[in-house]
Length: 390
Image 1 (spheres, helix red, strand yellow):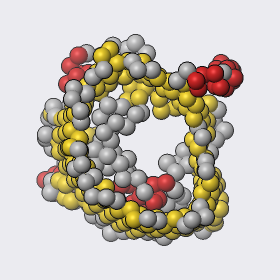
Image 2: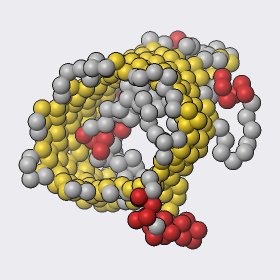
Image 3: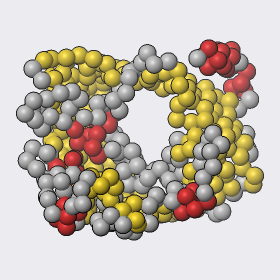
C-alpha cells in the first residue's frame, strides 16, 4: 500500500511537466447512496456501486503515447478497501504504422457494441442487470490479460486477435491458448454507412447433453448503422458452433449452457431528447422448470426488452425514464411462475462541468432488487448518485 501511495504521489508531483510530454492524467468516480429501500419487513439504507461493489469508486488513470509507443495504468479505490490495480496496466507498441501490439491487463473496448442507458448508469437491479448492456451487440474481443495484435492494413479495416496469457509467468499450451481461449476478429467501417464486425471466439472444452466432451467456439457478427443523422442502430448475434453445457447437476440436465444470443439496440437523438430501445434474446437455452433432458435443454426462448428516454434542460438539469421486461427463461433459466421481471426507473440529475448529482426511484417485480424479499415482493429503492470526472 505504501509503495502504491508513493507512486501516485510522485505521479501527481510531476503531472504538470508530464502533460507537456504526452502523458495525461484523469480520474472518474461514482457512488450510490440508497436513501431508502425495502428489505423484508424493514426499510434500509446503504452505499454501494452501480455494479454492486463497494462505493464510492475513485481512482487515477494515467496514459501516455507517442507515435509508436504508449501505456495506460489505472489505480482504483473502492470504498474503504484501499487502492488496487484497475482495469488497465498495459504497454502498446506500433512496430509499423499498420500494426499495434498491446500487452498486459487490457480494457480498451475496441469494436465492443454497447447499449448503456438509463438504469445501467444507476443501480442495475432486475432486468437492467440481467441484460448486461456492455458488449450488447458485439463482445470485447481484444481485452483481458495477455496480448492483442491488431492490424489496420487499409483505411476502415481492423483485423486482430486477443491472446489470453498469464501475466505471472505461468505457462499454457499452445492448444489451450490459441484453440481454446483466443479471440479472432475483423471489422470494416464503410464511410457514411456503418461498420460490419465479425469474430470467432474459441472456448474451453465443454460437455454435450450426453456429458461427452465437446470442442466448440462462438461466432459473433454485428452491424452498426450510422448513416442517418441522430440515429445509431446496431444488431448482433453470437452463435455457438455446438450446443454445450456446463456444471452437470444430474444425468438429466445441466445448470448452464451456451445459448444463441441475438441482440439489437437503437438510439435516436434530437436536440435535448434521446430515446433508447434494446431487445435481447437467448435462443435454444435451457429451462430448469422442465424435468426431461430433452425439454430442459432444447428449444426454449429467453427474451428481454428495454426502452428509455433522456431529456436535458439548458440549466444542466436532466431527466431519465427507463422500463424493461425479461421473461423467466432470460432472467433465471426457468419458466416457473414469478420468475420474470418488470423493472422501472425514473430520476433527475443536476449536471456540472465535471460531475453530477441525481436522485431516482427504481423498482423491480418478483424480488429482483438489491436486498432480501419475502414472497417475491416488489423491490423498490431511492438512490442518490454522485459522480465526477477530471
